[in-house]
Image (cartoon, rainbow, N blue to C red; front, side, top):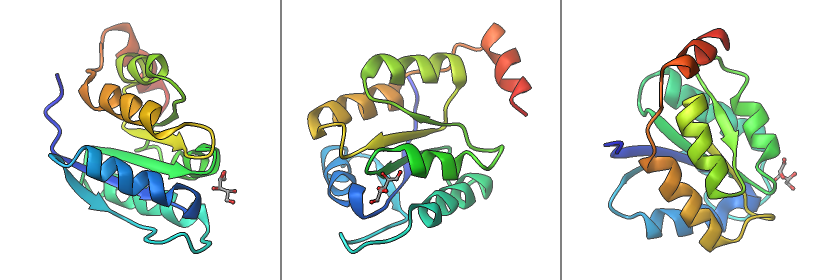
Length: 143
Ligand code: RB5
């Protein structure tokens, strides 16, 4: 079981309401909210970059990113070698990306994944450990 307490979270306008719902549902965690803070249209690369900064500076070990599909914001965040952002649409993906990829950022698509499923994915992502072993060698090769 992971003992993560502080988690960064960021979204664009498409993910704003899910971001707020996740913070409320998982209120026992300390959230580092990187925005955006309304449904006013913004550009998802800026929030992917904010997540990169939080991870690279060591402010947090884990993060959650949300846009409409989860695609754009995960592409943006994965431009840093410090980030392994995984777009997950179910709990099996969340479990396996923690166990096998040591993903440190979860990406969600608020327009494709409903809130209850998203909560289950977040729960799985935050409580599953990396398996190491042969997977560590592969993660190492990601650079
Ligand atoms: C914004 O309209 C939308 O393009 C964005 O939320 C995301 O889905 C991009 O990948």
